Length: 338
Image (cartoon, rainbow, N blue to C red; front, side, top):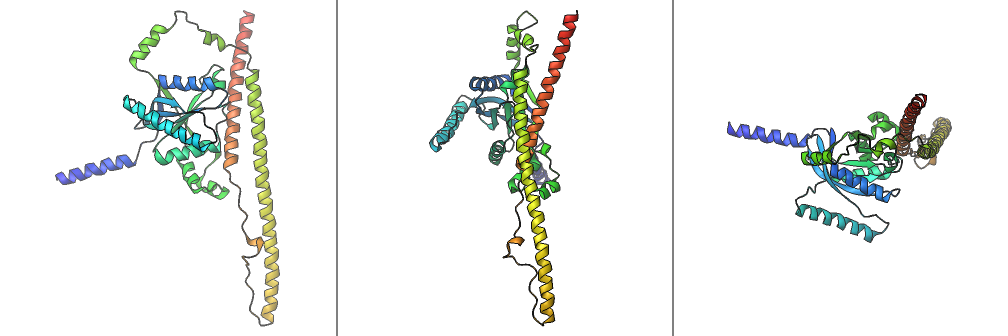
């Protein structure tokens, strides 16, 4: 009886370890958020990255600390120094009893232009060693408009399975029912502080109910931000048009090859009928050495999916800023009338 209970307990433990609950929320310490914002703002508009440290507890990924990466250059020695720097930083944090478990990384972006092949490759490299990881994206330019542009992203499981096979053909995408919206999954962020820090922040609050940041939200001049978004959106549309031209060329080549194959087969069948009439052996109806029977490789859909994702992101940003501008204009109109 005892052996049966022990065996069932071990089976339950092993099954709970194998089947992890899905990630529901990323809980970030306020200090870690401030470190990310400070690092990204100091080097803006240059793009920077850093390591996220914390704990993986059930369906919650807790980000308790972070540290910046040195600015990378295309040099093997400098890359090796960067890896040594990360290991040394984690060793020092471990010595002072700070969480040093890697749970992902953070990076800055310019106007939300983060959906790239490099981001996916970094995700796949992290995923080889970490069961669950996230990437925190911070946009200093978007935050300057009065909203904290901070989001947590992860790759969907279906996309990662397809990426490991490196097969982004139209047939596979239809088989997996994978569209451009199924690449990234945004995880809700919850910022938490200890009770002591919350009490201290309450004491630091000014007596005035209105702060300077509240006035900054009423600025009507957002033309530079809108212009940059529209410029990036035009670039995305040009890139998407180039991708569409690639697929049009592929389908034209495929159609031309199929026509050549049909003409060749028709000619070979007529020749075989003549050989049968003469009592000779017929020739095979397929010739692998012939160039018209070599399959034409289909272009990958990954780039077009990423460009479509990026286009949607720019449209959402323009829509959000335009809506805020209309609200401000109506507010100013009401104030002038009064």
